Every structure is written in C-alpha cells, then in structure tokens.
Image (cartoon, rainbow, N blue to C red; front, top):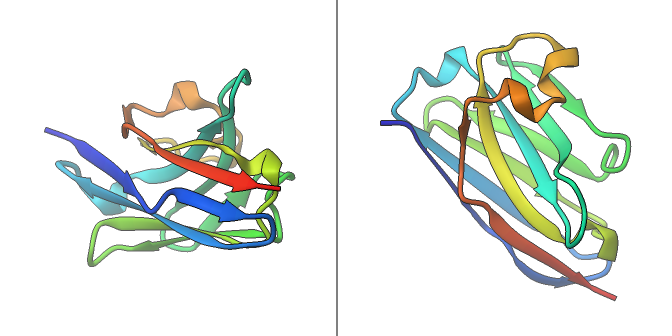
Length: 125
C-alpha cells in the first residue's frame, strides 16, 4: 500500500521559512517523480515543484528562487525548503508521486497517481 505523509507545516510570519517533508512508502521511490502542489483558500490546486530522475527539478514561477525541492533516496523522503514566505503562499501543501518523466507532464496533477493528505502552511502578514 502506497503511503505519502507530509509534515512540517505551520504558522510563520512573512519572510520566514519552513521545511516540508514527504515520507514515501510502498513504491519504488527512485522510479517516481515526486511533486508538491498546493491549494489556497478559494483557489484551485496549483503546481509548486517537482523532482525526478535524481537531479532534475522544476518550479513554478511563483516560487522559483524562494523554494528548493530535494530528495533523499536513502530515506524515501522529499523535502520542500520554503524561504522568504509570503501571505500568498498560505495553502494546504500536498506531495504526490508520478511515473511521468517529462517536465511538461509533471506540472499537471492528473499525471500523479498517489497523494498525501496535505499539511497546512499559513503565512501571516
């Protein structure tokens, strides 16, 4: 059974930092791309970042330069380091697993087959 468990969310002030973790089990971790998505209040779910094939990463324009995705294959865990947080980053953050290996597909949630329950990130102004 595939399990994806996010952690690390919380309340932080504008300009602060958080590191989210996504612990993955039940699948061959190295074979999957792992992505982060978020859904803010009253907004649609949006792509944040993805990491695949060991070294490839992709970011949305809204987080590029502020967020860093990384993966520890020994621990089957993916991290999202979030710096310079803004109130508009407030959302529930989800990690998800995909067998897709192309950046154009990894921005679409429909190409991910397994999802976590999400972790709340709130950035106060």
